[in-house]
Image (tube, rainbow, N blue to C red; front, side):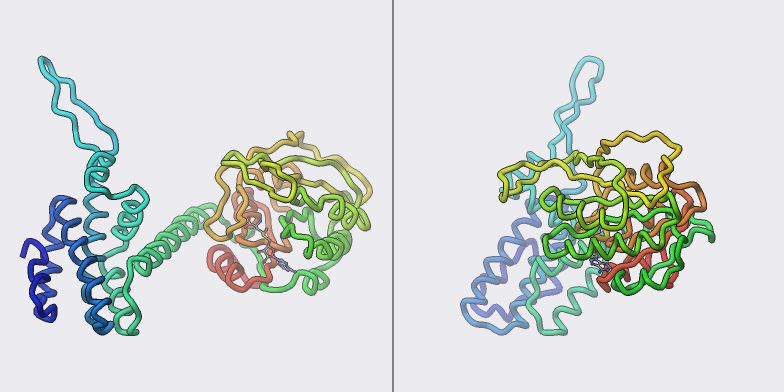
Length: 371
Ligand SMILES: C[S@@+](CC[C@H](N)C(=O)[O-])C[C@H]1O[C@@H](n2cnc3c(N)ncnc32)[C@H](O)[C@@H]1O
């Protein structure tokens, strides 16, 4: 069965699903897979309109999704750049590029990327996901598979991170982590026990009160002459500085310059390209030994574990300038744990708190030991 010709029969129940699946797997060119996909889509629309049951809808959807996965697999194999192998006397014909093939078939790049992502799911996981959705009597859609594929990529990234950290980490700097509200738990740590508090709190107006609690506890926990360094948004900066100044002394300000695209801040009609980094200390003042520039360029931030994940190299620079190997760094609002991984990489001990259970679990699973 080269395509879904049986679709044309009056009784769609006569479809030979196994043959359709096999036909998808046999496609060696994207246009063949695309043809099956389009037919399955048309059939799905027809079945929906005819108010057929979910079971039959899902069977057709399955063929469509399998064809999309096949398109993804074939598209991944296409060369992205045209290259000619110059040979004595003649040029080889140009290689057909992915862009050309997709364009000719009317497949948008964004759509092809989705298919390619779905194509990356290992076979057993792909079959399992389809089976689970069908067994739960839910509608089988490309979005479901795309979500599963993204989750697969996410987990794979985490495993890569884990492996890297496993190599670097020695038992002395296994981070100590706690799922909690820092306002309750910072109180339980011993006075003068921390060499640096490095954090990136949420920046909204409603979070300003957190900063007084942070500064008060940081003053108690920090060793004399140690620093609190934190990132902050531009909008409520005066309030943030006031809150922190109640308990700690202002030292300096820095700026984190974001390399990527600018972001609009509609409240002030500004295109934003960065944010302040604030440095406070617990008296008496003792300058850090290492000279450091106060403008930091944010590399691609680490969004694997947190939508607000920060760029790790900047955290490493700050940690290395303001602490010594073996020192202890606290991040009371660690989010996706950038401070924590930066500490492991720079051989510092770290303590991290996080109020959000899911973020905490991810960081814990990746690096931690529970407090
Ligand atoms: C901007 S994010 C931190 C992102 C982090 N720097 C990273 O790179 O992934 C701020 C985090 O503070 C956490 N948070 C807010 N209030 C908290 C509290 N009272 N105690 C502990 N964590 C809190 C939020 O759940 C959020 O994950």
